[in-house]
Image 1 (cartoon, helix red, strand yellow):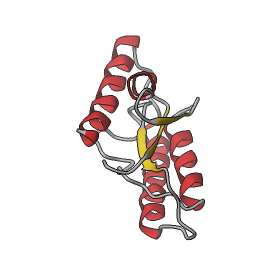
Image 2 (cartoon, rainbow, N blue to C red):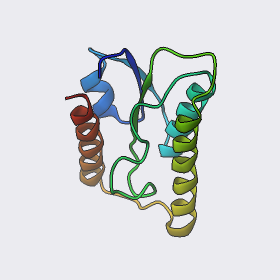
Image 3 (spheres, one colour):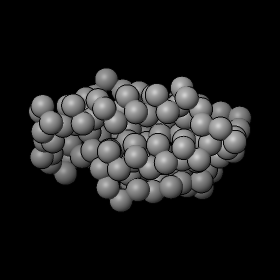
Image 4 (tube, rainbow, N blue to C red):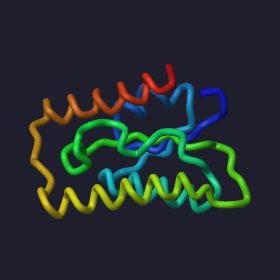
Amino acid sequence: MIEPVIIVTNNPMSRENLSNSHEIDYVVGNTMDVFKKVRDYIHKGHKLLTHPLMSSIKPNETPYRTVVISKGKSESVDIQSLNYIEEGIYATEKFTQKFGIPQWSKQVLEDFQLIDYDLIYHAFN
């Protein structure tokens, strides 16, 4: 990515590994909290640069999400970005209501952190 970005994440591994090179907005909360924070940014004119559901892991299964948005903002709302984040919110609500949120062991949670971080790392590289 060439332009300056903001990384919105609730993943401690993403925060730790990306904070030296990028602005991080660390969210203390779950996937839905991250998506709602991203939606707030989009309403302020920022643009989504990575898809909120960029992995094949169901949104209720992984507690970690890292989303990249533009640092710069425009005067208007990017409708495509808004549609993508709203779809992510809808999918997360649907899967959470239908299947619940699993209680993972510490090791599995660390694995999910690595998967989420790896996806963003490769988006940059």
